[in-house]
Image 1 (spheres, helix red, strand yellow):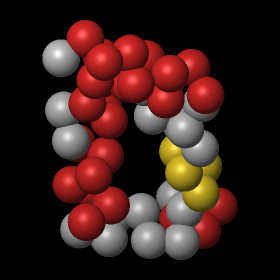
Image 2 (spheres, one colour):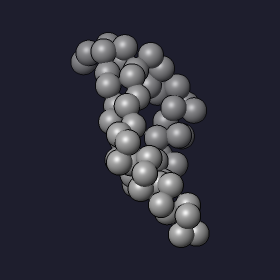
Image 3 (tube, one colour):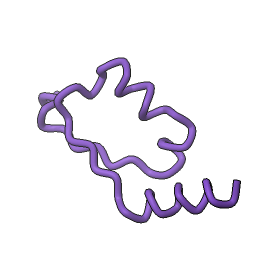
Image 4 (tube, one colour):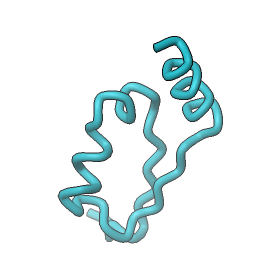
Length: 52
């Protein structure tokens, strides 16, 4: 297995919305990894917040 510092995580909207990625980061499972959140995921999350 490669070193976690070589890991790049690109989560989709569902993983962010349901808190799975937050929980994994909180447990430091991905400490040292790069987290990339695509602009489309952020826009979709903003749209969901706007709709309530």
